[in-house]
Length: 80
Image (cartoon, rainbow, N blue to C red; front, side, top):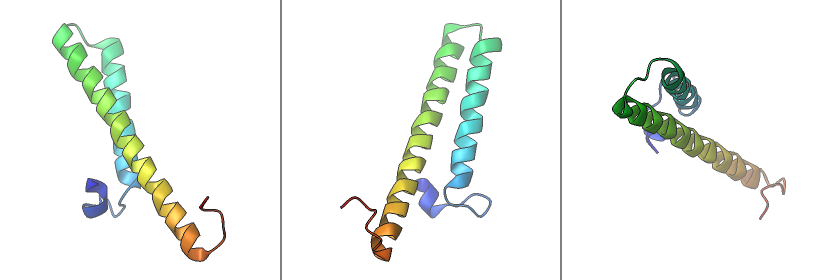
């Protein structure tokens, strides 16, 4: 994923998670307040959906990273 190769503000994943949350929140706020055309509604809906997708990918990568660390430590909590 892009966040693994291009860190923002020194963080590989947390910054992308925060950025996706801010973009999603701004999109929903725009949908509730300033959208006055179908095109704008579609654009902000797509932007909100994209922010959810990015957040999901980042969280999934965090889960995989933690599972690998757990498996390497041999603590038996990796589920495998």
